[in-house]
Amino acid sequence: MPIIETKNLSYTYPSASRPSIQDISIKVEKGEFVLITGPSGCGKTTLCRTFNGLIPHFYQGELKGEITVAGKNAAKQPTMEMAKHVGMVFQNPENQLFALSVEKDVAFGLENLGFDRKEMRERVNWALKLTGIYDLRERSPHEMSGGQQQRVAIAAVLAMQPEIIVLDEPTSFLDPLSAEKIFEVIYDLNQKLGLTVVLVEHRLDLTAKYANHIIIMDEGKICFDGKPREVLSKQETRLIGVGIPKATLLYEMLKKEGAKLGNTTPLCSKELADMVQEALK
Amino acid sequence: MIVVEDVRFSYPGGVEALKGVSLTVKNGEFVAIMGQNGAGKTTLVKHFNGLLKPTSGVVRVNGVETSRSSVAALARNVGFVFQNPDHQLFCETVDDEIAFALKNFGYEQTVIEKRITWAVNLLGLSQYRKTSPFMLSGGERKRVALASVLAWDPQILVLDEPTIGQDHRQKENLRQFIMQLQTQGKTIVMVTHDVEFVAECNPRVVLMREGKIMADGQGKQILTNSELLEQASIVLPQVAQIFKHLITQGFPLNIIDIYEAKNLLMEKLEKNKT
Image 1 (cartoon, helix red, strand yellow):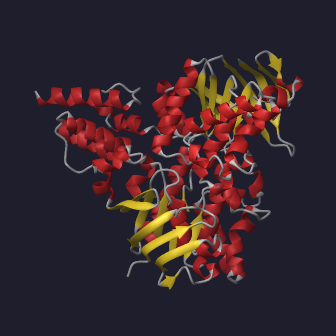
Image 2 (tube, chains in turn orange, cyan):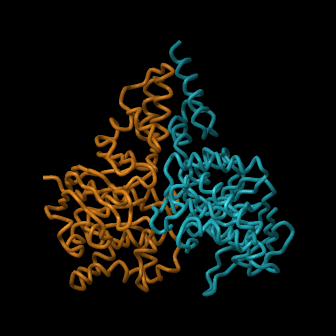
Image 3 (cartoon, one colour):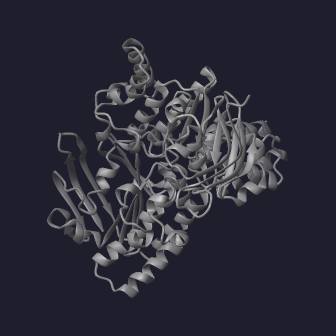
């Protein structure tokens, strides 16, 4: 059974004149690393908000169709119940942080679920170390830089050890090396713990290599849904505002000019470099 | 022209964010300031419109010392687009948002109307003119913030992370737009982590680390120096990464442009065939 499944899901924000997502039917299997991408305003964030019931509980408006997450009807369950299954990291960390210290912010969700002190301490420390902010645990999140705040938000979600983690452009405020580290951490959790990851990103240069499922949206609808190598080698994706990885583009340019390279579309620089090495042997 | 002379800055509470920074940005230059989170990039550019005044040292914008001038007076010449659009937006509609500064600068209604139309068309916001900025997506709000600053046509434009939340096409629009501003002689200072975007623009790059400037040069040089970038917590752009992996093949090491990369690789592959 898919861990996330939607059938003909449509949603219109209150007072909006047209739906933000329309007729969305997708399946995400447990343990997948799903990349959702598409032009700004295409409905990516809106779709993610249905996964933990923020839509329709918090945003109201009109939701049609079916949504099942971790075996539960996400539109009917209270958000609190869904929060045990789905952790969300938003674009803007400031909207998510509120406690006076990093440690308290990360512990907040666990306190609410009534964890005992020892386990809480262990989980908080685990999450702080994973995200590289253990040394900042006594600082106030509000005097930290945007990138550091984003790590606090991610740590707070990881501490809950949810089955699904949904990240909406989680590293847009981070410097590239920190962003790469965060993606590595998430990828590692995906591989080792079987955590299902849903990542919303524009920057496929950084992220395509981690995904085994990609969904491309445009104007509230699904345009492509499949394996990254297959989807990103389709020429039709070029017509939508999707940033195809440079390595993939460069590979296509070389093939077009008749270069003898392998037939597996590369998704990152290492893969393309290996193909060139192979051809130069 | 922006002249920064040995500027130190400490936030109340004692954190010293700038530890002796000197930098000159000439009129018409396009500069990208890059570096680790917390390196002092945003702190530095906030000195350019007087939002922050140096604890010691001097900042001069077009010859005027910022500590002797008000933000309001400096804003006319220096347009500042913040990293987080929610720090900047507060009006009920996109139109009002863009009109706000123009009204404050005392433009006539007909001029204001023209400027709004120009700005919303430029940034693809014309369908949202009567919409509340808070109904828009993160990427769209970012463009509203940019439109509201561009509308008053400042000589110097400071963009703090302009590509966050922008899709590929909008980034391409932004790049072309920056190029267009440059041909008009505007000065553009951009704080960014987006190495791919910088690689496509190839501006002058200033690298910061722990409150100091650690390197300053053309994008092509800086963005292909992996040791330097690692210290600044930046990764090589994709194209440069490919050539780093192919280091034993004797390619030149300063390639960041995808077309240049294609030509070099093609040449090598062809030669290998014969």
